[in-house]
Image (tube, rainbow, N blue to C red; front, top):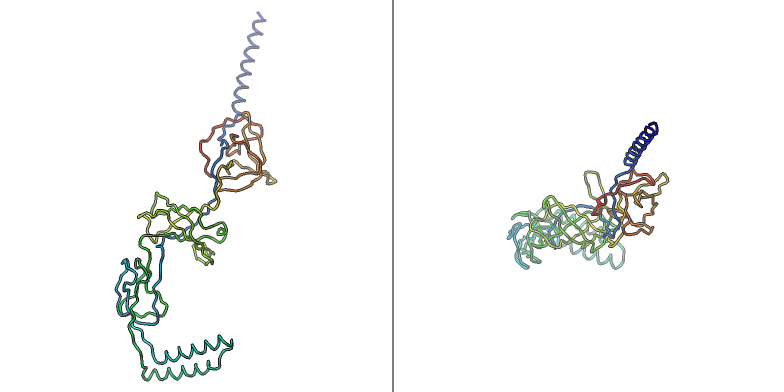
Length: 345
């Protein structure tokens, strides 16, 4: 009888031990998301902003100081090359004619000799005397000049009205292509060295919310400029982006956000940033899944892309990389949930 009691007791202890061991083993298994290494297209992007503008803009300026006598167009009008834009009345006093002639002679002499001519003082004195005579009663030569359109386009920026005065070189209006538009971007000086003509660009904006527009870098300004923003002054370079297929929803004057693809590599075994940790010495490492356990693998970054890195170490297609491995330790048991798509940053 005692033998049966011992046998029964031993069996119960064994079963209870197995149950406890199973529960302990179950609790030690870490559930993790993994990315199975496979070739993807890696890219680097640069973020910036800008505005939509009409293409091929040409400024039409006053040829000299004058009074506008008649304006034949208004903003939004489509004009053809050679069509009348406005007429101006050019007025020039005898003193102005005299000064221009003297100045031209002095300038030619200066170019030949490299020495400022003595006539400069005489010219100043003559100018003073002529000014006094002009007060008594200036003699003027008047003439009407008709300014015509230098090209086909749409009239923009016209603010001058009949009877208004204009100065030489002052922009009266601009002409722009009626259909073609482009994006004028402001790229910070810190990133402009990575931008090249021909790179692909994706444009988005609140004015055409819900859609994105493809384009390419068409031109990079040769000089940087200072721009004032809410965060202060910054140095930027203007980058022109041609739009592949302009939509009627995209209008000149809209603000846009741009993503410029500055680097592109196909068939790359990319490690997501979310899989990378670093030790106290700065050595980066990842955890890979091998036979159901987490195995630590030091890595050395080769190239950084927008969503991940390529490494100098040779990795194998199909290897499982543990994502967000903060709770993982070397050799611990893991239960993998494989992601079907490359994880976002």
